[in-house]
Length: 625
Figure (tube, rainbow, N blue to C red):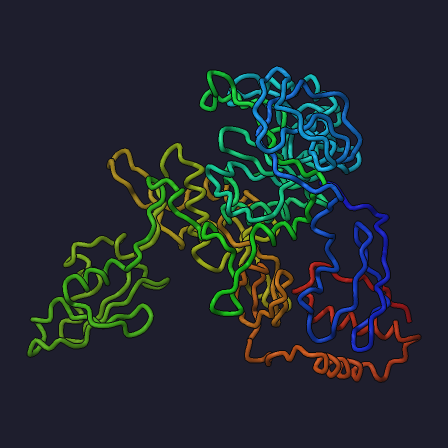
């Protein structure tokens, strides 16, 4: 992956009015940005806006809606300079008739300052890849006929005129690529330099267009009748695999793109070309891709793009926020039912007690007051003293106890036999069957049962949980080893494989090949992403809300491990902030600083330590005595 420049400028933090904390420390970013002073005691809701580039770059030339025009002549030529204004052929205005495929477009658009131009494929790439990591290349490919026939060979974009002729399926890669030592190019994740564009696929067919909202894509391309790819140029491009995975997972989980169209080095269609799949032919001819919108001046920071595409909405509790799309809730319907059999919503044993009229009430969680099935054996046939216990780690099939004289005779085994239930019914665990040829579905099912545990997360490409650090004794993130993952999978669900001799499904341990695939996956669709631990209440960057409830917060992707009782509510006023500042200054009353700026830097260091969970980045400091 690309590495940041060692010459990243260090920018002084601006001075701020009285009552606002100043520091003389410096902060380094990849572009010229200045950090305003932050009010002491609380992080303002707009604090992080000063740390993030403007989400859109606009020009005086406004975008207009575009309708379907005829395909122009053959595009190509050398790559244009990195600019979004060097364009070629006009797009047809709204209402213009379609032209033919041999170069005759619809009627010319009116000659106005607002007319949009149809870019050639080369100009399109120059606009959406304005900056590349040193040495990285843009790659393209072109395929004749049905693109499913294969042959996805990566070519340097300098060959675009020959490779991506308009009578072919034409593609570019969303990532820039590092050449191999021999100069060859391969569109593989390990060769990727940076991820430059987000492309939402199958919008209009598989993805509801209304979910995208009012945000303007950089381009909108119809790739088959009624089916669109929407592209968003990223500024700056992303070069962290973990960050890209998290970014794409949130987009896919919100139902905004075909989940099969994810990945850092995915191919997307160029504006000039065909869709050669036979199913999309029109009048016996391949469908010609149509550019409906072209806004090269629009580029988005990844964080702001997420805020626009996957906004948060207020729920009954001010501390809990969720994305707008119900698709974020994991759906088990996409996992093959031959492989994945979810646990029953209601415990089967409890359900039978109810069906038989033998259920009374829930005594406590997992403990139920029931009528003994053999109450006729009780003295006086009293209906008392029987309870059913749901399965747990100690009693995996649950338990049954009757306090009458036959208590040593009837246990959970006899209850199951009496009701005609099996031990599998009693365990009531999700069942995963190792069906031959269903590797992907098995891995999906395994990840699902891990996610259902509620104590496993993904962080830095690893599956992690919380535990005590053996040295400090503090709560810390503990990566799961492969043996620990095997144990977690066996606890989370039951596994079966087909025994050819008995011709029946037999219970088994998680198979090593499936465990290995999950362990080495590095990214996961169903495990919640974890950015870190919060040891005190914190302000969320996304919406400025103060999170005072411990536990996992899906918006900030942080896990609160604090005792909320120990942290009284915060009074978010200037007076309270000044009072807090006075308390901090009292801690430093015996120190003599060279100047007010030096004292401010020391205070900011204390402040940063407290608010660190809410900061995406923080200032660097140099101490001299």
